[in-house]
Image: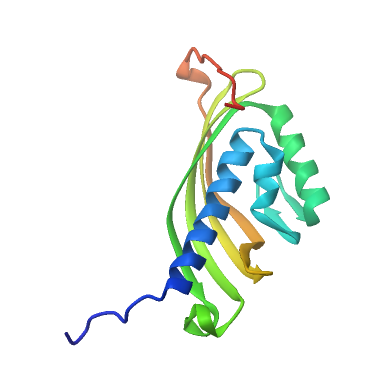
Length: 163
């Protein structure tokens, strides 16, 4: 079987699953206003760089503050994350405690005053394994577009975002 990819180890599958869970916890926690779930995606000293509105948050306290502030501006936020690629340091999960990744996100938002918004961004991430757990150590959110739809005349029923 020439050209076949090498077999994937259990350690790599575990690492990829933990990183995917961090990605999901970021989106579900942020969208559902579940601060504990959201912060569980990050290492305590992680950095979150955001394009729009511009911010650089370092550590759980600043990340939590930014998340809480964002919740006051929106009635609804739904992230759809996809196209996630992870590369391990030294090309192998066994070779290190760090990885980098890139992923796309689309978002559907309703502002506090009812404005319907669509957006898309690229996440540029670094992950680290500490005490056996992979989490985000750095995330750069690069906004591709932010489109406000005042003409949409959409009626939005807002349910309980916390589930």
